[in-house]
Image (cartoon, rainbow, N blue to C red):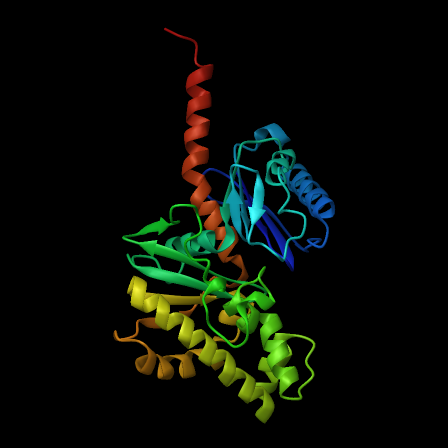
Length: 312
């Protein structure tokens, strides 16, 4: 089977056998600024992996795609994914079938990260936990009683729209209030308001580790936003564990977990859960796609074998 993680910054593909062993993999900077360019990139990378593994496209039993946003099955569009322009158009998602020609499943990327965390990471054996991804975008995967919870329309965990932060939520309706202030762009904007020019959020966090006072103020602002969002999540879901992932959530956890943990008892009525950084790093979505798809892929292989068996 083929696992695909489609992000704004990177595209990651892994080809695995039915035991779950990865036999070929590719990671590339994403061409997400163009719908057609991204689709062509996915098709090329899949073809390269298939050739490298000595297979043909027909040998791929199933492809699992992880993407931001919500798949609108009525229109074939991807909703609430402003970092992937062009995918919001009707029928856009259906063209994923062209990538390998195999049956495919599309899942929200952060939901898959939660599945990966529950299978291979800190969530293993934890029946109630949330995976909160903070990076280019913001999202959450929810696991209840050991199972992924999607909600009635697949929108559970779209916490980018939590009313957390300053300003008018209509100012950037495509992103949501929480995401507009706490994502990577929000961190850079907060730094600029304090007079610090930073090309990336990583620059801000690196400066904070070096003791830069302005950068430390930005970290405090970010921690406050995250703490307010988690307070709402805890009040509703009462998770045992909060796993922080994403380019900010995991990579800046050393700066954020302490102040967030200190702030939560003031904001949350319940005793705060454990808050830890994901151990899966950038592979969380890819590993989740593998874990999610393996059972289905095995069933498909079995069904094909049964159908090919002569009667009697």
